[in-house]
Image 1 (cartoon, rainbow, N blue to C red):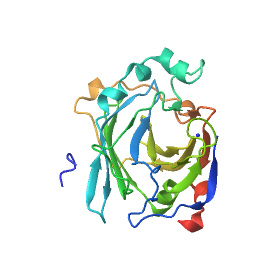
Image 2: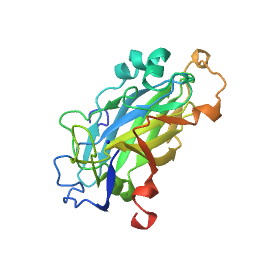
Image 3: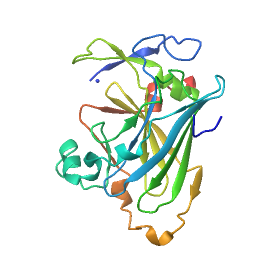
Image 4: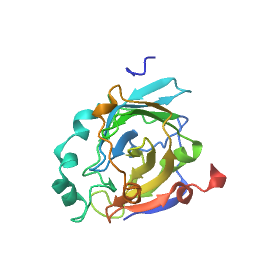
Length: 238
C-alpha cells in the first residue's frame, strides 16, 4: 500500500482487559492520534504522519498538519505567552493542547494500536527533511491501555486513556515522545532520525546558535502531571 494514501486523576493499578485487537472494550477508549510540540524560536513543520499495524495489515494516515502548525497561536509569541507563562522565552518546548496541534486519523480512525509510527518533518531553521520512526513496543501499548479515572469536571468518574502520541521536535532532527491523556504526560524517550535529507539550497537555511540548555527543556501546565513510562508499566511487564 502506498504510504501516501494510506484530567488531577488517579491511575488504577491494573491494566484494562483488552479485546483480541489489543485495546480495551470501552467506549471511552478513543482512536489514537499523533501531535507535536514545537518551540517558538525553532519551529518545524510536519508534512506527513501515520501509523502501521503489521498483523492487521493497515496504514492509518493523519489529517494534514501544515496549516494548523502555522496558526497564529503558534507563530505569535504574545499568544504563546498567554497560553504558557509571561516570561516564556520562545525556546522551551511547551506541552499544552492550547498551542500544540494533535491531528486525528483520516476517517473515523482505528482503535487498534499501531506497531510503528512514521513522521516526516522539517525544522525551519535548517531545512533538513527528517523521518522519525518509532516502534510502539508492548510496554508502550500497555501504558496506552491503562485505565485512568477523571477526578473532576464534566467527565468526573469517567474512564480515560492515554491515546495521544506527542512528539517534541528539536532543531537537530531528534524527537522526544510522550503519551498524553487524562491530564498526564508520560515520557517515552528520545529518537534519532531514521533518515535525514539536507536542503537542496543550503543558502536558504537560517542557521543560528541553539541554546540547548533551554531548547532541551519542557514546560507543562500545572494541571498536568509528568511521569515516565517505567512509572506506568514497570520494566518487568514489558
